[in-house]
Image 1 (tube, helix red, strand yellow):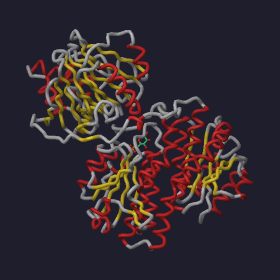
Image 2 (cartoon, protein in one colour):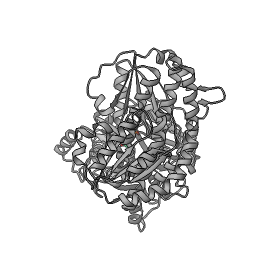
Image 3 (tube, helix red, strand yellow):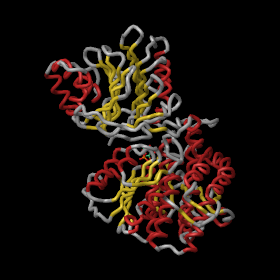
Image 4 (tube, protein in one colour):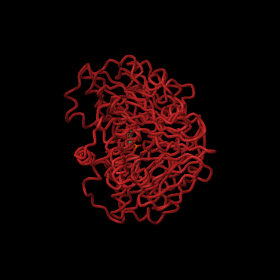
Length: 615
Ligand code: G6P
């Protein structure tokens, strides 16, 4: 939920830390801070409420010298977002500073114990408890910092990625992780730390992804050393990151979200590259080849995910049941992990996560693994925790997604789920050859259709957005494959425009939401020409009879709905199960333009974070 950065080397640390925080701001942006040991050996901490730009303004007249430092951008969990609760936090003596991403769950007990021993606290955070505990161990047991960190981490319960700076040891940073991501970058005589590789790649492509319960000791003039909590040295491979700077910058668009919406045709081509082969009429996923028997023998699939990824999961369920003829359940990871689910060794659990770090999804994976299921990950962030915890999986390969509201990751996830259903359906013998070939060709053509759709609908949607900006509530309806599209459209709108919006299966409208419908409540209806078209048509009539305005997503040339709806967005024709890949695009754009019209911060909406590494 928070972003952490560290630097130790030959450059001035401050610009590296600030640039790094800007790259990680998607993880949280309610306060930010930096700690550096200056050229005179003093430990300076500057922190403020607000965004990284506020920190820059605040620090502009301060002493910014020094070649070692740590920095943090926060998404508040304990203690309100203000400059006192912002990280870094000091120990009582002021010798140690810490940054932390995660939650120390037993902080209240530890705080009470430390207060009884006379330790005074300045903030309400769990993080300050950890640094005070480290210092208390260091002084009371006369240990070095590494030993104190190890002992403290034995005591705390929770999730963390931390970095600790010590005024008395200015050539060292100690970092550790458990259940929150942390990456060490290795340059020429310099080291970097980041919650992901994005703050690091402009300096070096060589990184080590730390595992749970790793402690990294970074010292000037030495190789990085990694030990476990018992001080046993661990060997880690240095990985080459295949990410370049252009991928994580805005590239001329006013917002990352608009860039990412428009990237989708190219992203889906990348996602399908080498997997969907139209020349030989084949869909290949290496995970399905490597684990063919296990997947063919599966008696049930269970998809676990959160947020937008959960919506992709709802589409995956229909694909798997339609094409592979095997039962598939979809669960919120947060519910699944706490309800003692019945899992058999013949179950396959599919974990979907853009970031690969969502705490609830990761916990659901661990639980399902303990219970003997086979785990398949569908993730975007390469090398993140979920892909490392699963037995196999397929990356969606859509590149870094920076806008907090997920767009291209959703269509990437649906594309992988479609390929998975096709590859598996073929192995299971549940899809006939003609249908398989038709679907794979249609899937292959989706990026082209998406490109045309983006060109044709963007201006129209901008105009529609201007008209509906002042609505206070929205209802989104869809059926079958388009029901999750309605949910996702509503989620996008509420996330970035703060307009209340609900998604419903269209037929359920009669069982409640219809009571809300009047001229003040616009209704977005996904009404493509599929088997349920006539039924959705009746829904539109019912809505119009109650004087609400209808924004309809229809297939090109649908004159019937054009006559009934107040605004119409035309979608290219495709197979029913692929419609979500197209229908989602206008809804992403509509949410985007409404939020822009309302002057909202599209890329960093209030109270949200891109990567939810806490429960
Ligand atoms: C947060 C993000 C959502 C995302 C969800 C799940 O709530 O704001 O956009 O869908 O987490 O994240 P994941 O990385 O697991 O897909």
